Image (cartoon, rainbow, N blue to C red):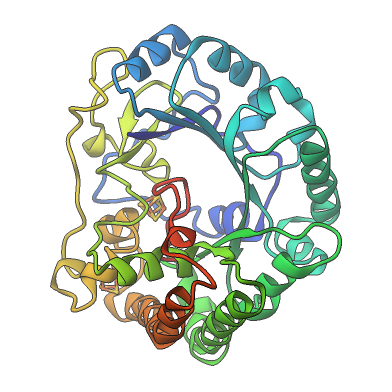
Length: 373
Ligand code: SF4
Ligand code: SF4
């Protein structure tokens, strides 16, 4: 089981798609949901309880999460000194990576660091100076001996040219990432669809960009005999190659859960405070016996449900975007799946020619990459 450990609700950035949207959505409450808005700002339970909870699952993976988890470097040290999960991981905005000593950093199996692409775009979304600090920190982390997986985690919306930004992240001369994941800012807020140009952008820029990017991905395999870990492609291609259907690919609610700052367990970090979805408390729940929550309609009636998996449990439950608006998101999923399907014959040929192998398409599932953006 995978658990996001939400160490704090606070963040040291004010990104457009998160802080900005919170302000715009200020009056929008969840009328149908019973939400506890007064969660403790920092994890306030005894970390021995977390260590004990985790010890009941030999495959337990703990991912530090926030807000910004590195605002709680002390708590991270304490938990890493106490708990013995199979792996530790962290999802961070990267600004404070230099606040944690290498002896801890180098124990992470994976570091997911938020970067939206090049300096101009990252600083546009996340604030001036963010890119420079994060890239300096990432370089330092590697210089100090980190040998785990470093994943650039992009949030994408209308200002993003997906092809240009992903190719920049994997090809720039300063710090080239070999692992990239991206997530659409779509379906998470109540008021944004009407004032945004999401539909136009997704049809004119994003989906054509994904198609070009898929071609680039396979061109790169051909030229370099290596599979870049572009997670949305990697996950879908892996399933298609093995002809395997998939449940919700982030694992939210069935293999990937979150632990709130008060110790209550929820299906996914975005569902913090939603009391109807509290699945127990770390003091008395068993990690292997947690209730499983699955997506419902319209995903369960969708013709590509087996490949998509449902995209997002939170969006499926809260339905913050109308049916028509969400259909534009589903069109992007179709675009992504079709882009990979189009390239599949070339991929199979490269595998047959032993330029790349099936193993190159393997990855640790539920590692914080949702696969379907
Ligand atoms: S494409 Fe849309 S409706 Fe279909 S499974 Fe995915 S999220 Fe659900
Ligand atoms: S995709 Fe949705 S359900 Fe899955 S982790 Fe992200 S917000 Fe949660």
